[in-house]
Length: 192
Length: 192
Image 1 (tube, each protein chain N blue to C red):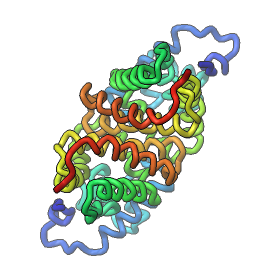
Image 2 (image 1 turned 30 degrees about the vertical axis):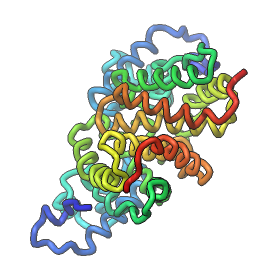
Image 3 (image 1 turned 135 degrees about the vertical axis):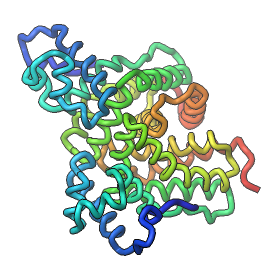
């Protein structure tokens, strides 16, 4: 999965520990104050860096949150050989990531801002969703529209549960989600 | 479906057109400015009423948004006699409501705030979700956990699509959602 890293926007700047420190401060600040009150100013203060340091790397809070989420999620596991295992692994992995401290809050927050912010939507879609979409299209041999639907179902369901209960979805429900999705995607040929 | 109306908190006050005016102003302000920037002050200004008039009826922005959504959604249609028709109608109705101007934005916004706001979560869950959950439990003869899962899947999927694209889900995908949900819920006895 290729993606532009923040350092690509600041050539020559070593991708030092600053990103890691800012990402950790972002998640802890969002977890503590909620997405709306976690301003770039407060995140910079929690990271112990100047606000300008943050803005030099990320032009907006939305861009920072998206890179922070990319860093927190990393690559989707696609080692399994069968379609059933691939989908199962991907859903369990998504559920676990969204359950990590601050990640669900940051995800739900940036997401909700995006509903009324076309520029943020473009960042979310192109930088965060597209790499996973393309990896899943390849691994599953499914067309774009089916994978977009899969992502809507899995991520949407997990975030909705998080919003309503403040807690990650319990294992039994994640299992139900996996069964439902597998049944729906079973009516197509698998990858090889 | 019973629910406390704002007027229950202000006995003697006629449930005049003020609520309708404030609800309309809430949706248009959220649609125009986005959830985060649609403050109670701006909503009151758009409605042409004093901020205190709004706060006398709704103690917080979250409470206002939830009542506004209750008003926009109204009752879930449960006239159909069969399980398949009931689920199909409920999903199409949810998709249409979330697609109305301002409703998806308001829903996604209050939802994301709730992730880090336990009091708002309680309002969302008790005032907005529970009436629909109970009506669906009755109509479908399904236990609480299964209906909560159904709501997570349907509302979560529709809101995720809205957040990523800024547009309601297209009909073909709503149809896929209905098929997926129907298959998952088909392994139980229907109502009567």
